[in-house]
Structure formats: C-alpha cells, structure tokens
Length: 540
Image 1 (cartoon, rainbow, N blue to C red):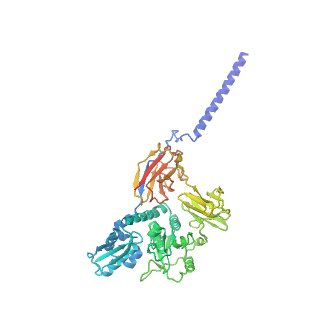
Image 2: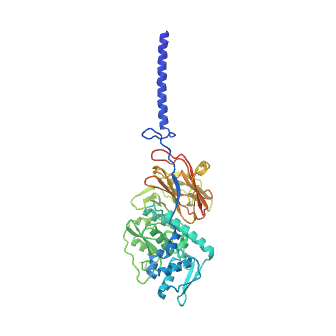
C-alpha cells in the first residue's frame, strides 16, 4: 500500500513539473511577443527607445530680401525688353519709392532723356509687387528731378507690404514646397490661387491690375493673375511665359517637357465664384475655342507685353490634357497623392496628374467634393448624406442628419449645411488630438523666433532610420495662438532620419505657435519614441 502511494506521488510530481515547464515556456513566449516589450537586436540585447536628436526652425529665403540686394535683377524680362532701363538709375529710383521719398535729384546720372524716361516708366512694372503704393512717377522738364505720388502714406504702407510679403512667401514655400514634383507644384498653385481669389472686371480700379491686389485683396483682373502665376511658377522651377492679346492675359507653362496654355483667371471662375480646372492645361485648339466663346478670338496672341516687335508663341499641339475640359467646378485635388477627383453623371472619377491612371471610385452622382489628408469627403445622391472615402476602403457615412447645399474645407475644418435653413455644422478633420498631451512632463526644446511675414520649415532629426510608410499626423500637432490645430505638410527624407514640417495656413496673424509631439514615433527596427516634446515658435 505504501509503495503504491509513493508511485502515485511521484507521478503527480512529474505532472506538476511538466505543467510548470509548459507555463514558463508560455510566459516567455508571451513576454517576447508583447507590444509592451522592448525589441532585441541579433545578440539578444534590448534596443534603446529612439528619441529626437534635435528640433530646429529653418527660415526660407525672403521675398523681400531679393529687392534689397538688387531690385533691377527682379524686373520682369518683358519690362526689360520694352523699356531697357538703366540698372543704376532704376535701383536708385526703386529705393526712393520704397522709402516714399517725394522727389530725388538725378543730375549725377549721365543718361539721355530717352533712357531716363524709359527707366522711370519701368518702375510701374514693379508697382504690382513691391511698389503697390506708387501711383505716379514723373520727371521734371530738365530731366534732373524725379517726383513721386503715392496712394498710401507712412506706417500703412509698411503694414500692407508685410501682408503682401506674408502671402507671397506662403505661396512660394508652403503652397508649392521644394519637396513636391512639378505636377504637384503646378496643380497646388493653380488650385490655391483659383480658390482664394475672384476675378474683377473693374478696369477703372487700377489697384486690381497686379499681384499685390490678388494676394492681399483676393481680387484682380487677368493681368494680375498672369503676372502672379508667371512669377510663382518660374520661382518654383516651372518655366512660364506671360501671354496676352488685346483683351486677355494668361500663361504658357512647361510640364514634363511639353508646353500648355494655363489660364489662372478663368480657373478662378472668370466673373463668377466657381473655380474650374478646364483651363489649367490647354493646347492651341482648346485655347482658341475658349477665347472665341468669350469674344476674344480675333486678337493677336503674343508673348509678354505689347511692343514694337512682339514675339509670337510657338504652336502648342500636345492635347493629352483634353480630359480637363470635361471637369466642371465639382472637383477636389489630392496634392499629396497626385490625384484629381471630379464628379460627373457616372459618379466620382479619379485620375492621376499626368492622366495615366483613371478609375471610377463611386458609381452614383455625388456633390461637393473635398480632400483632406488623403481622404475624400462628398455628399451622396441624397443631400443629407455626408461620406468619407479613404482609398482602398468602403465609403463611410459620417452624417445623415442635415441637408447639405454648401460645403467647404478650411484649415482642416469641414463646414457643411444649408444657410437657408438648418445652419451649418463643422467637423475637425485633423488627426492630432492635443487633449491628452502632458505639457508638464514633455521635453521642452529651445524656443525659436521669426518675423510673422516670413515662412519656415520645422526640421526633426532622428539618430536612426524611422518608419516612413505613413505620416505620423496623429502624433505631431501644431497649435495656433488660440489653441487651434494648424494643418501641416510632412516630408520624410530618403534615409528616414529627417522629418520636415510646413504649415498649410498663412500665419500672418499668429503671435506664437507650439509644436507638440507625442510618444510613439516608430523606427524601422520596431522601437518607438517614449518621450513627448514641445517646441515654441514666436512670430515677432
């Protein structure tokens, strides 16, 4: 009996030991697979959590600085062709006009009367940019004195100039940043200008003739559109020519080695409030058809401004963008992913910037399209159905409670509804939520300062390669002075060690912005950042 009990006890002990071994193995497996665990390197040692090596602010080249160095170098080539101004006299007069000097003595310049007159006249070519306040420049009978008249005085001139610099810098560096390819830059500029301005047909108001009016006042005649587009396109690396006839002005642009007519004025709606893509990239046939419909067909087309021996543009026969003429005002552009969405009687179509890829994404008519962070928002067949469509997924109904007859997107906020009844609703589409950010325990980086009318990029440096397949929008947020989230463009470097941030919002009216970074930025080796960071930028 005692022997049998011993045998049974030994068997129970063996079972307990085996069970304990199985449990230990399972515990080890679970701990090694746990998301809370620390990844190990090939040697079995724990890898350290990555951090951010540095956060810095990098100031963009200032639009204002170009003219401080040598105003003559910024004169339009068409002004040079028409007037042939003297460099030294031009810079002298430009500085005087910038300082709102009433008159200057030019007797020290040994120039002919003709050169003096032409140099003075050439100042008006810049009146649409830096010298918006200049209304009249005239020479004395003996050609020894130049006097000026201005439409603004004193501090008001400086305030308006700073507004103009802020808008221009934002357009050149944030709307069309260097990280974009040429298609992205072109469509970004075209879409931004079209949707942030309206055409003016008041030819008696000389303030609407120029880029200053277009950027600061949001309105201009065709010459202002064509001048601004010409300057901005050439600045960001897209060859552009200013084109005109007696009735209208537009541009010829070069994309991927081919030339096209681009009409930014008609893109903004041409005397109505609806923007269009159909005039973005046209061949000669489509350009002439549009001019003829507008009653402008009989005028001679030239490059630049009217002059004695005008240049005639070379023929443009590339019609690969003919499909644009079928796109009405119901479109949305996904700049980041190189897509154009538009609605027709078949549903919602999606096509790549170069026209090489096209597909139907929704088979039913839809309205009021908007794109934000890669997702499409639209109103379905019923006016009370608001949907979100993320590529590769099924549409999601996000609101069916109100009739929608207007919808617009501004700074990451989707506003929709009916002004005649029911009012409007607003959805914040920004993925970052700052309510859970622990400011007190964050690593506070050294604050930076920059004038409010200038633009910049925020550069995050990492000691190792980070995961770049997705942009960390839910972990990185930029807050305005009032605590509102400012939409950001994000760009990873090729090696994954640098993340560059740019604001999508004009910051002219902000005093201070704050960058907040949550833990969880992933490295390619599987580790994630464990710290939170904060970085203040003072806009002086």
